[in-house]
Length: 344
Picture 1 (cartoon, helix red, strand yellow):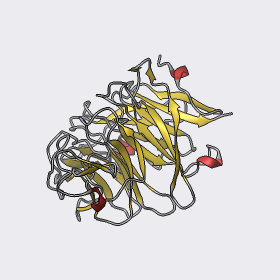
Picture 2 (spheres, rainbow, N blue to C red):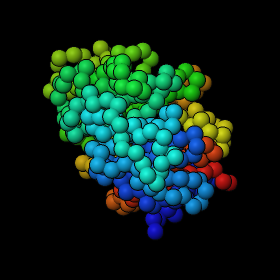
Picture 3 (cartoon, helix red, strand yellow):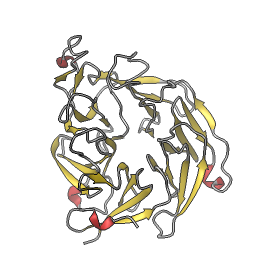
Picture 4 (cartoon, rainbow, N blue to C red):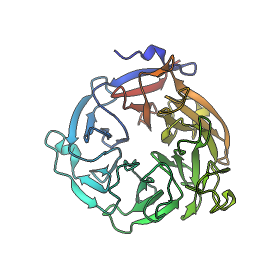
């Protein structure tokens, strides 16, 4: 049994185990029909969870043999999944959970490198599928039209275009409910010490903006190797610094009504946790509070306790607002999906 009693939440909130049968659970998406789809990384599998909020969910494997299929997205009855250099599609998937179809390749135009090659994906309000491409290294200066960016394409794979550059490795993004602007997390580089640079929360206000990598980190930290080539003043600063090495991954705006009204349009961020910091940090879910103008007011810890005495027993990866307004959290270390509800 997972020690959920160790998870600390604000007063009135409760956490429960939705499923412990999803090894290496990563990105999540839910169909209009209520099926929860979950990607993985090393497993190469994609899972479907039927009736996830019923108390008796059923887990099925709907795809195997993919390369780091972290990201999943749903549109028009089809499940889209990332597979490093490819985006694939499983048609009419909910009618075929027990006999899933072979994946159809939508696009194979992405790099084959596995270093930062796993991809969170999601459909935007413009109908395009957004696909990030991480840098194939810790720090290097790759082709900005090929790496270290966020791209988008039509559902059929056409019209592939870059919308953001200078993004080292984003594994989570969402669109503001009112402005429909793209907000995304970005992981800072390693080997600059325990406390720099911060992971970033960024906002895209126009297509083509550059967010600094590899020249500048967190808005004001010149890279020791590449920083002399271009100054930080040339790039978009983050809207929030999230902390060094917290590994900020999945993020979503809270659009439900189950939580108190003060939580509406807040951002929840899954912090996967540090892998090379002297004192571990992260392994929690953070909340970023915005005002009515979309400006960051403050940051706070929403859920923590997966890290005990310097050792983790779980690592949050993605967050998703369920139809009933509860918050789902995936955990690739425990192979679990949690559900957080407000139940005072």
